[in-house]
Every structure is written in structure tokens, then in C-alpha cells.
Image 1 (tube, rainbow over the protein chains, first blue to last red):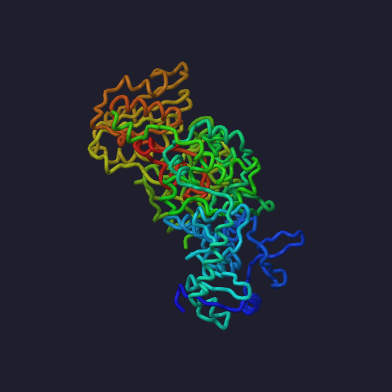
Image 2: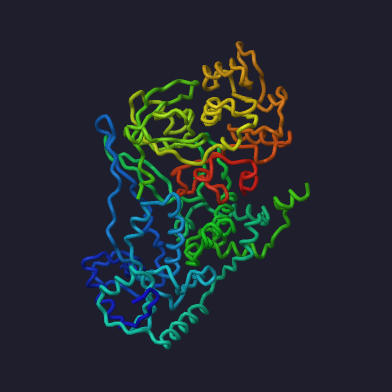
Length: 363
Length: 274
């Protein structure tokens, strides 16, 4: 079974098998709660599992970078403090992840790698197996097609499911996925060309239902070259409540704060927690100096990180996967979600500015 | 995999009062082997922890050629720095180091060296001055300009005294508000430029201090005809992790903690926010 292999399997058989291995392993999946909302949580049984969902409002990055995560505990008794790094993480399966969130994981994988590889991230990531679910139907806020975020993917998952009603089309995306599929001991049928045609049709139908747009190119160019009218940033800064909601729900936002907290007289913990570049305190220095004291500077910062060429080149991807959560969360009457900002920049038009190169040439 | 966020336990060997609100801490790592092997470069920095209070970044203030211990100079301005000021010899800190890039040093051999420091900006530059003095003959003229608010606000007063006596260093000091005993210059540090002659073509300038001072120093150096890649400065931002992850110190797509803190003006001028 090579990576890239495609199979068709009976849906109920797949779920039954996954439920049975779920008795020994943690399986996290979409659950219908009493209030009618759908959220991802560890499945004790598959009774509450639902397929009637598009996405969890709470971004699934929380399973890799929890809103609050202990780095280490310390004990201050005796001459020398004793430090203890946070406990290891047990393997878990994330079932039913939408494509946009899988792309979000890919974005975070890149960010948390490199010269300073973040082991707190990787010990969760390496223990996570992704079974993603291609989207047959978008939410009114979805725009993944603008950001290479879906509705289905070619890579990034361990297994990808496409819902054919009574059957799943399964894409094997990695060795981890292959192992998991083997352990499910299912009767697999190799996918036929008509199965792939079927998926294409489903995905195209989903594509056609997408409502918001984020035609990024012009906004990227304007932001990269600092060709956005300063007054427009000012307007957006005036509208922003600096609530930080957009950054907290964003699958690509990774900023965190680090704090110490005493549990009792002698024992304490150092933890990290989500932080937001939209908070005035984010850049507030002990001296009182604050380079981004104005909301306008902070809004500008957010979109520079999301859409500038400098960052796209560094990350290999814009800082958006089109999940649409910022559309849902924005308190400022949807004036400042990424789709709205991209549209506002595009319609406002680029201003003429002298680049560093032009200034040099003029000398 | 190495844990980026777990500090090394470190012991305070010595604390020296520099000014009314600034102290220099000499520190070594509790782990003998780690301490023996530990090296850093001029311009790099540490994240120092007071357990239960938090962590803050400080530039190395001692000679990288000195092994076995290092210095940081700390002004009490925030929670962590105030807690450090309450500590005494033998107390334990957490240290993560070395972090960040470093001052170009080998690359500038043979050139004249100009150091322009303001207030608490002198300590990080001291990690550069010391190794230059160790290999003094490898460099041309050595000029140090140091400005502070008052004579008492100057750090390293005994060391400044030593430097001022050396024939192979030109040290000029200035203060904004002199006291009765002050016999040297009065005014902002850039007013010292009138008192020195520089061979701009063969000089490299290093500057560190308050952001407003750095801005005027760079402006004047450019005015004198300094090439942009021969003006070296450090940038500072509120910082948490020190390893390019927490996002606080980003300017454009550069992170002060890993891409800096040392930048040439050629790099600084391309940053979208400065």
C-alpha cells in the first residue's frame, strides 16, 4: 500500500473499526453537544459522533498548541530550585479534521521547525494522526479555495476521507496513515476512476457554493510594497476593538505569552498561553516605550504577517487557509476579517510610493 | 530533542552597584560541565529567569574570552529586573543562553573602531570592547563616545576611569545634566562628533542606547558619509521566548531575538517598521 494509494470502504465498517481501536487509543472527533453546537473532543464512544458539521469554531490548533500549556514546574524548597519539564503526550487520532485546519497544521509545522525546533509543539504533532474529511458543503463564511486550504487536499493528512454517503473514499497520505489503515483491518477496495470522478464532482459542487472571496494578489502586492493609504490603516485601526479574536481563532496564528505562576509558597509553574498582536500590551516594553501603541499599527502588523511577500516566501504559504473563522468572530461588524480587508485594500487601490531601490537609484 | 524553554540553573557570584537603579551580576552555571563548555559571542544575549516572577532578556556585558562566568548589567524597571535587584550573592537564577546573532568583529580587523553608547546601552557594547582590547593591535584607532543623563547615571565608572587613562583609546564622555564635579562635555552624545576627527572610509561604527539616540547617531553618521553596512546597531523589542517563536519582537518578517539583535543600518532601513 504506497502513500498516495486510494481505496473505497464501507462507511459503517470504517467507523466501527475506528471505534474499536478507540478503546485503546484516544480518538478526537466532531461531537454534537447538548446546545446543538459541534465541537471536537475525545470520543468515549461514537454515539455522539456527528457528520452534520462543517467546522468547529474553536480552531483545532488547540490540540497542538493548547490555549494554555505548561512548559515546566519548579519547586523552590532547598538551596537550588528543582525544575521538571512538562509530561510527555500520548498518541492520539484527530478524526474528521477539515482541510483548512490540516493546511493550518502544515503552516505551523513549518513555523515550529528550523534552527529552533519547538519540542513542545513536536511532541504533540508527532503523536497526532490526522484523518481529515474533505468538505462536500461549505459554511457561508468559507473561502478555502482562495487560499489553497481545501475543500480537499493532495497532501498534509495521514488519511483523507471523502464522504460518498454510504462509503468513504480514502486517500493514504503518509506511512503513519498507512499503518493506521492496516490496523483497522478493513476490507479495502481499490478506488476506480469513477470514484475519483465522483469526488471531483462533489468538490466542484462545494467550490461553487463558496460565498466570501479573498482575491489576495492585489492586497499582497500593496502590503508588501507599503502601497496602502495610511488613512485606510487609520480607518481600520479606528474600527478595531483590539479584542484579539481574529488571532485566537486563526489556524495560522501562533504567538504566545510566557508567564510564571505560583501554585503555593514553594511550587510554581511556567506556562505559555495564546497571545495576540492586536493587544496594545503585546509590544509594551518595561521602559514604557511601545512601538505599536496605536491600533492602526497593530492591524497593519497583522496583515503584514498574513499577506506580505516577505512572509509568504519564508513560510511558503500566505498566513490564511480560508477557514472563515475571523469572519465569524470579528466584533467590528465584519469590517476587519481577512476577506473584508483584502476587498477593502483592493478597492481602495495602491498608492504610489518610492521604493528603497528607487531612492537609491535617484541618488 | 533539546528543550528550548528549560533554563539552566545558575548561581550569582557577585553583584556590583553601578548606579542608583542598575546592578551588574556575575553569574556561572550550576552544572560544572555545562559551565566549562559554555561560550558566547559579543552582542549575544541571555534570557534570565527569576522563578515565580518571569524571564527577561539581557545582553552579555563581559568579555567572551573570559570563560567560567559572565556578566549582565540590569536596570530595575520591570517585575523581573526588580526581583533580580532583591537577590544576593549565591542566589539562583535560570539562564537560557547564548541567544541571538553577534557583532561583526573578525570582519572589521584593521579598521578604526567607533563606539557610540548611551546610558544602559554601554553594557552590550562592553562585550565587544573587551575582545577588541584583547587584540588591540589588530585594529586601528579606537574611539568610545559615552553619554548619560547625569554623571551618576554612568555605568562601569571604575572601568571608564581605566579606559580614559589608556593611550590606545580615545574616550569622550558627556552628560545631559552635569553636577559640580563634572569637568567633561555637556550635551547629547551626538555633540561629541564635533570633537573628534574620523577617517570615515576606514571606520566601522557600533551604537547602542535609547531608540531616539540611535536614530540621531545613525542620521549623523550617514551625514558624515559612513557606508550603511559600516553602521552597526542593536534593536530592542519586548521579548518572551528568545527563539523566534512567541512573536513579540518581530519587526516586519525579522525577529530581533534570532535575526538580531545586531543589525547594520543597511538591514534596518529595509524593515517595514522602525
